[in-house]
Length: 161
Image (cartoon, rainbow, N blue to C red; front, side, top):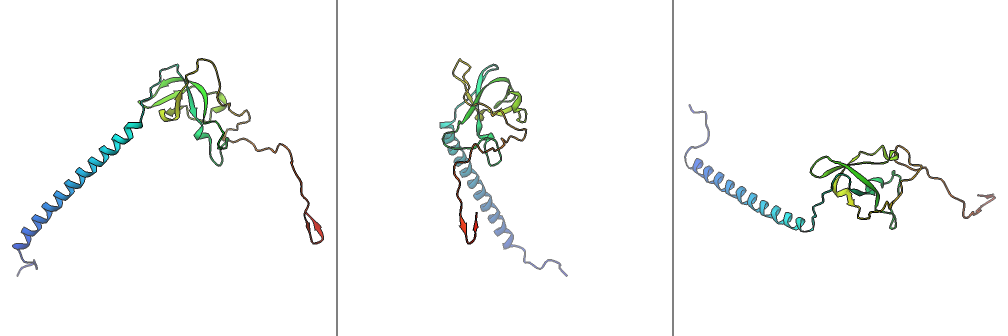
């Protein structure tokens, strides 16, 4: 008495061709994906620029990391995009640099990716954006009203609000 309920013969040959066709399709798909990746890489490399800084160079730091709903600096059209300049202390990796930050920014990590930095071309000690003096350790600035501009009294039934 046999345990196998399927017929042996023609079916095994069909399975081999099916596996071979599937393997060929996977190879074609991988080749097409590789071509697409190479094409996209060439497009990205057209606008990519190689940045390299030396120890002692002064760089501006992008302020995007200081912005956000609970960060210290609000983002609007006229707000500065970079702060600094800060001197480069050392090159940590192929794309990372350690900066010498002021003590008020001790909450920040001192190593930044090259995309967050711009080279300072001015020889003078020109400061683009100041760090707020009342910056707290959680990178927030206390909100204090400057003055009351207007006051309205509204009458609701028998009350004045």
